Length: 165
Image (cartoon, rainbow, N blue to C red; front, side, top):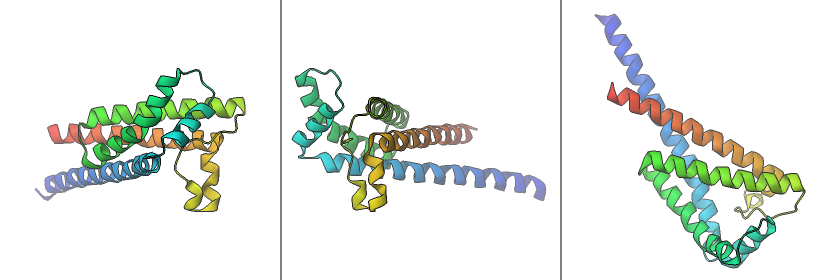
């Protein structure tokens, strides 16, 4: 009898650990999107300049729309990640935004563009983190964030299956 209880306790512990990991990943990603979005609020012209620095062909109206909408999209993702709202869709949107950021920074890195990625100022945290605002650093950072998003998706699916069982 005790052996069966141990198996149940082990399964519960794994479920608690997975849920805790999921919450931790949501908070980390949420804070990053919150900081990124917050740093762009009211900064439409610098955000627009950052968009143009990628030297991609965009109609001016679309670039201006992106400069105005991007901070709010990032803040919305942060809130949805923190609250766990519409979670499969939040994960998809987070992955798509990060994939777009990764593609943009990678092409700038590959082309040797000296860009301001439009990210929040990592150097304000510590001077050695300024490398994360370079095209290469931003590409690597975004890839890490994509991996964290994929890990969060895996954890979420696992906890959903355990809850259904």
